[in-house]
Image 1: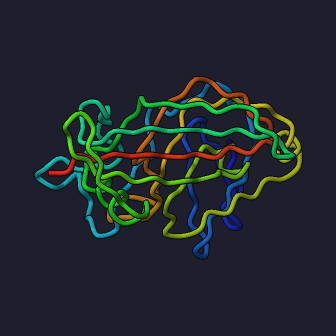
Image 2: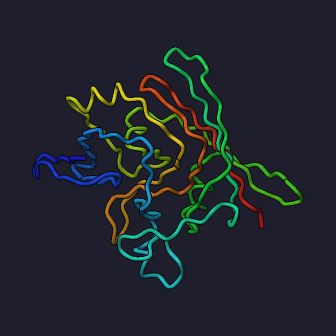
Length: 228
């Protein structure tokens, strides 16, 4: 991947990490689309809630282990959260291709997860499942082709991210068939001690879906949190 600003020219950076370059409150990403099939993030880009300082210096566990490395994500089976994701895939004329569900997921063991759940995901309701009382929320999101290509799915952006794709990269982006099995809810912001980042607050895994550029994917997230 090559990233470009108006002042620094082209900067090489290996996949699958992403870098966002701050330029007049807008991010311009020059995307040379390389084969992205079956690539997942092993080391994930990380950030924090706006009101939180550089949390790797805090006494309790924060989002970061240090200035660069994200804390280990927590499987939902070991957390207060349960995740159910339904993905609906349709072709360019709206015909249904598939409906796939997944319940295996991860969450960041940090207050940012509560922040996203409480303030960004909509109306809550109380449900009881197996004698356990939960708060339940449902959130629907349909990523654009650019978001699917970069695998960034923001529920919040402190500054809008603009994807600039040109030349052969644009042609390839509009022709490639890609596979997906990891879907994410990202929170994108700038925080003290860290650059602008998109962190994977909630994520879920499904069976592999093959998606063409003209297809549309709709995510229906259902997230439960144990009610104290």
